[in-house]
Length: 351
Ligand code: SAM
Ligand code: SF4
Image (cartoon, rainbow, N blue to C red; front, side, top):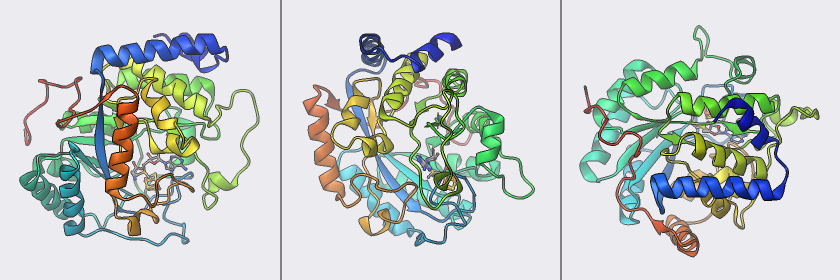
């Protein structure tokens, strides 16, 4: 799909035309990844973060956050819970936390792989080549790192690099791919300063990076961040951080990367708790990520306010999602739900 066509879908307001976009995305999803909805159990293992991302409630200077880091045993208990609930993957996510060490994390990955059949996805921020290689050799299967925007000037405004370093997530994603991980990335929708042109270029970038997983969700302002406290630009070029725009991006992501695994995200469900997740699933998505973080920690992983299902138990979350998936006439995925994009083409661990 060419840039101009993506752009015109992003600006489309006609409901009949949009119904056509949803129909095409849903048919493409069915054809390339089928009717299964894969469940990935999310463990938010630490909310410590050294970074200053202008939009995120976990940014280092936010002193209103109660910081925590789960022990390896606690994470392992969550992984066993994921297995017992029938999930095929555990996603270990955190702030960029130097307290998560190369060797400690490698031990944890090895324990999860030895004790469960789960695929392990990491989402631990911009980590060194040495750490990423070590975790891959320990058995990690996938890595998620959103590039957030392909507009370099906007990216630089939002992501001050660590002192003495340059932050280049697109280059890092290519190195992660070269290490043999399945690669996931994505963007926030409607971040202040993001134009329609920018978002169209982001979607074209998904295809150029040949992503295995694409995570997109609305930007939700956090009052304790520089961006959340600032006025939103009111001009015609500014992308709205709306539910409708999120569905458009999910649908277009499916059309440009037909075989990718695409979650219907928690941020979307936060905008529309009643049926946002379901609408994502019928407009291109094929994954959901139930939260396995123990509730006593979960409330402190506040990247944005008013997240849905904050106090739901893991078992409650699982049965709610099963019921929603069945009600759509879809099936709950079994097994690891590896990327059909990479199947048969992945390099051996440690190569
Ligand atoms: N620290 C890792 C990283 O940055 O990749 C993983 C955790 S980070 C909290 C995961 C994602 O949360 C980010 O990639 C970003 O897109 C999203 N996020 C952060 N702040 C947000 C906000 N205010 N609204 C919506 N999404 C947000
Ligand atoms: Fe830290 Fe990730 Fe939030 Fe940035 S987005 S402040 S790296 S947790």
